[in-house]
Image (cartoon, rainbow, N blue to C red; front, side, top):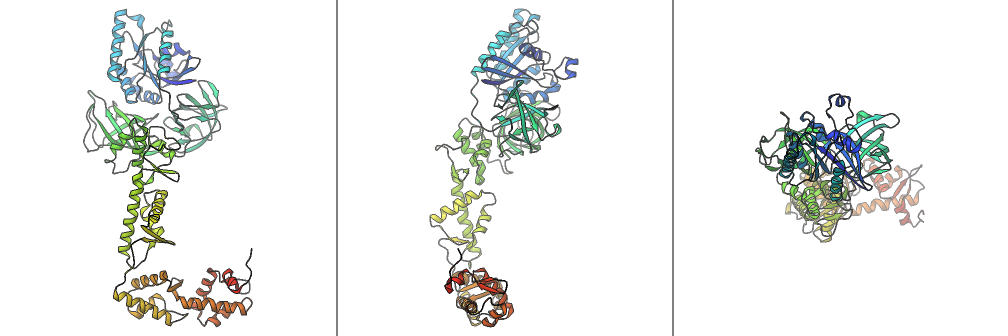
Length: 635
């Protein structure tokens, strides 16, 4: 079945609610005050079957200027406009304002219903119809059909239904967008059903039993049941009005302006990069830093506007700007929005979202916002990935960063590279490789006596604002190309070698001589620095080089043995293990001829390399010693 959502528009008292009632039999004025005053205050809802396979939801909005905020909440998510114009008055101020809002929201399709035609003669009605069509053509850029109706006598209703059916069949088929979103326009409680929210499903679908999130507060709930147009549903898709009964939330925890989503990629933001267009005519200019009213989805918040050149924007002008919102908002790229002045409250313009949460330095990114909002899905994705930078996007995140559908597997002709589950602009991989090499070169200059740097330090240095997948792929590619050398937990540039000066060579040789001469009880690094009169940092660097070359073995940070002494340690311990059954520390101390200060770290080292193992009575051969002894291994 084809579904669409129609929104009424028009000046107060031009008969919108009466016409909806005549078409559907549903009175959309639900509030007592509305019935007492005969005036629509808040949005109301109805549905209309235009054909066996075409059903329209209708959002009836208030026409009075004082309730424009409610009108804006109902205008989002509609597909076409039912413009109601009274023949005896013709287009009025709110007629044009509603049309301007429709244009800013990207609504181009509609039908004009000319009401109260019985109050004027035919010529006057023709003038009113022509004036309405002229306004539509001027503001929307399209020519909408006009149908004369008399809601009270039900004249012209069949012709209006036919015009609406033609409109419905001419609407473009909605894209297959799997990302579920429902901006909430009402919430209430029904006995036996609990908390119920209503809204238009903007994209994706929701099913009974599904888990949903309520943003921006990020509360979770389960969908107990669904209704669309008063009928129970197992699943509700896009372009349909929906009522969802939620389990796990009170009425106060979900209100108009909230958004139901299901995908974890959704997140509320406080900053929006947008392409803004001011209305032409007598609209006041907008200044850099000005506080404005932002209408997005069904919500309203205050926001300050940051201009690209910190100057104002005049009527009819367009610019890419940033909106700093005072409350978190939920959006995706391509979403339309409306702006009104803070005071007096006047419509000033609107536009579309180009980037979610842009950085503080955003002015060089605006060209990509406009490309992202363009007609080409491939170019839109490329722009979104450029904006993502080294973070890249998962497919779910990319779907929110571009207004076009992002398939699960990006097409080959799209300018993107996949690493793991994330997609990147190809230039990011080249840039990351260069950044890694530059960082390594700087590290080698700063620590010329270290044969390499810790891989983890490299990852941390370049990965603060980058996805781990991108960093790891760049490291792998550089290693495969032979531009870096990975040696265990350390890495160096391929052409780097430690080159010692003459005095450093002398100091290295003095260290080796001092440690070799001490056998199993060598001096500590502080003692070595004092004995050969070399600064402690240089001693540490030289000792690290000797460990990396295999000349020394590090038992603890402050205990280093020559390769010969370390082998003596293992051989002596092996002899003790062969002679004695579960020898004690004292037995090892006697055999090694060392003090307790050296014995304890040596025994812990032997345990660590699998040469010994602790037992109830002392120590027994570990796996490595059992191989040396020739004993069979476990397992």
